[in-house]
Amino acid sequence: MTVTMTSTGIKTPAAYIDEVMAIVKAKNPAEPEFHQAVQEVFDSLRLVLENHPEFIEAKILERITEPERVLMFRVPWFDDQGNIQVNRGFRIEMNSAIGPYKGGLRFHPSVNLGILKFLAFEQVFKNSLTTLPMGGGKGGSDFDPKGKSDNEVMRFCQSFMTELCRHIGPDTDVPAGDIGVGGREIGYLFGQYKRLRNEFTGVLTGKGLAWGGSLIRPEATGYGCVYFAAEMMKTRKDTLEGKTCLVSGSGNVSQYTVEKLLQLGARPVTFSDSDGVVYDPDGIDTEKLAWVMDLKNVRRGRIRQYTEKFKKAMFMPTDVKLDHNPIWNIKADCAFPSATQNEIKKKDAENLLKNGCKLVAEGANMPSTLEATKLFLDAKIMYGPAKAANAGGVATSGLEMAQNSQRLNWTREEVDDRLHKIMIAIHKNCYETAEKYGTPGNLVNGANIGGFLKVANAMLDQGLV
Ligand code: NDP
Image (cartoon, rainbow, N blue to C red):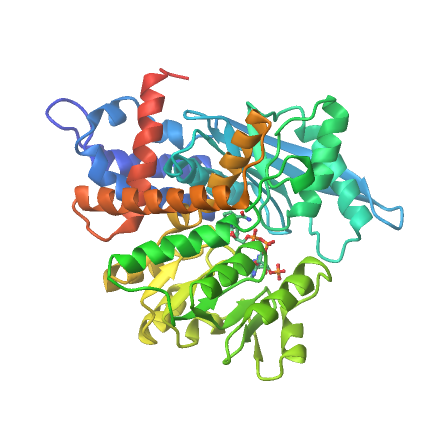
C-alpha cells in the first residue's frame, strides 16, 4: 500500500487512517462488529489528526486498537441432569491509560471475541466521557442464561469466576453487568470471588444494596439515556413531554428508560425481545411497567405475554432474515434502541425518518449500523450515539466504586443528582466538541473526539507501554 507523506515526513491523516484500518481488518479477521466500531471512531478522528501529528508519530491508532490483554478460557460446569457443559469465557482488557479496566460482562449465545472487542473498544471512549477515572474493558461468555435454573446459573458463574478472579481486582479491573448479567449473576460472581480471594472488595459493580451496591445503579443506564435525550431536546427548545417514544428490548436498560420517560411526561408505547415487539397504542403506564418488570425480572417470561394481559396491545414477531424490524416502523417522535447491536438497519432508519422521528438516543451499544447512523446525521435529527447516551450506567458504576473506597453509601437523591449532572456534562462536552471541530450538532464526532483526546493524551504522557 502506498502511503502519502506530508512535507515533514509524517503521513497525512487520511492515509494514516486507511493504513491502520487495513491493519485492524487483517489482524482481526471475521470480527465485523469490531471493524465497524473502529471505523466509526476513525471517521471522526480525521478532524483531530490534522492538528495533532504527534498522535500519528506515536502510533496512537495502532496502539488504541490493540487490546492490552485478551483472556480466553474454558468454563466447565454441571447442568441439573449431571451432564458436563463447556462454555467459553472472555475478558478483554482494552485500555488502562486513565484508570482500571471497567466494563460489563455479557452472557449470551452470540458472544464471541469480535463482539467483545467492539464493546471493549467503545467502552474506552465512553468511560473517558464520564469524567471519571476508568479505563475500558469488557467480557462475558457464550453461556445462555435463558431457561437455566438458578442453580445452573450459580454453578456457571462460580466456574467462570474461578478463572476470572486471577485477573481482576478493585484497582485492576472491575467488571459489571450487561446483557444476561443482572443482580442475580453479579451476586453469584461476587460470592465466588470473595470465597476464593478471601477479601471483600469492590471488585464488581451492580452489587446488591446490602453488600456494597449503589442506589440508582440498576436504573442508571436507562435514566441516563433519557437525561441525555432531554439535553438534546433543550438545544431545540423542546422537551420530552407528550412525545410518543419507541423503546426496544425489555431488559434492564429498557425498563428504566420507560420509567424515566414516564416521569418526564413522555408516552412510551413499545417493548420488545428477540421474538418480537409489543405495541400498546394506549401507552405503557406505571402499572403496566411494574407488570413487565415482574414478568422479566422475577417470572423470567417473554414479552409476548404482555398482550395476554393487556388486550389492546398487539404483538408483532420479528424475523431476523428481513431487512427491517416492525418496531421502527411505528409512528413516533423519539426512538430509544435498548436491546442490542445493529438493531437499527438502513431500512429501519428510513422508516423512522419517514414517520417523522426527530430524536434517537441509544441505550444499547452500537444499535445503529454505519448506514443508519449516516442517515440520521444527514437528516440532522437529534442523534445521541451510544458511547455518550448510555454512559450513565458505567458512570454510576464509577460512583459505586467511589462509595466502596470510602466505605460509605450515598442517598438515592445524591447518586441520581450526580448521574444527572454527569449526563449534562457529557452532552455539553459532545455538543461543544462537535462545534469546535466544525461539525455542529454531530454528536457522533463530538463523542468520539471528546472521548479520544483524554485517552490519547494520557497514553502520550505515560510513554510506550
Ligand atoms: P438485558 O439482558 O437486561 O436485556 C436485553 C434485552 O435485549 C432483552 O429484552 C433481550 O431479549 C434483548 N436482546 C438481547 N439480544 C438480542 C438480540 N440479539 N436480538 C434481539 N433482542 C435482543 O440487557 P441490558 O438491558 O443490560 O442491555 C441492553 C443493551 O444495553 C446492550 O446493548 C448493552 O450492551 C447495553 N448497555 C447496558 C448497560 C447496563 O448497565 N446494563 C450499560 C450500557 C449499555 P431476549 O430476552 O429475547 O434476549
